[in-house]
Length: 279
Image (cartoon, rainbow, N blue to C red):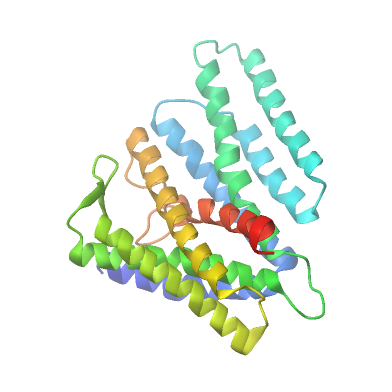
């Protein structure tokens, strides 16, 4: 089976399952998000070890999951900030007792970065799904999740298909040799089309989204840029660690971080765009 066939076979199995969790929301969606964070943080710390460095894996994993819990409980932002302060203090305190002076800077930095990169950024998907709760039967959170996932995955598909056939001019040859400017153009077209299609489908058959068409197009373009940035950033981290994939959990895609590297960036960008500008 070729990589393309593996990609579509995996998508055929995973997408229906995801749609069920998207629709259920609540505790079920939260549990799925926490599972993703758990696997993602494990893969990240394995990359750290592949580089020959150390991280405080237990503390990092606990705090990464804790951020998701706080987002689900919709606590005050001050509590989230206090938790991040506790993270820094806990990591530094543990490092003091470890007596690992040569590795103090890298261990503390990589532990905290992992929590922010995987736990903090991705856990915004919980906030996005629980947007304003359910009022009058209108579940905008469902639309927002479908919107950001559609833009992210269609932009990735567009970049892969167009770049594979017509890609000539490399974007970042030293980091991600297969990425091309032609593929980037395909990502923009597919991603924006996904945004418009998601809005039209929801407005016509599911619920009135209230998201203007220009906001939809602009958000689609922004999220495509964020998705490409997330992809290249993870490629940079893997290249530094000297590994091809972050794991093997997703057939045709490698690890979970390999599949969700773009989502890690697009979800928080989408959330704050909607919160600060569109709504």
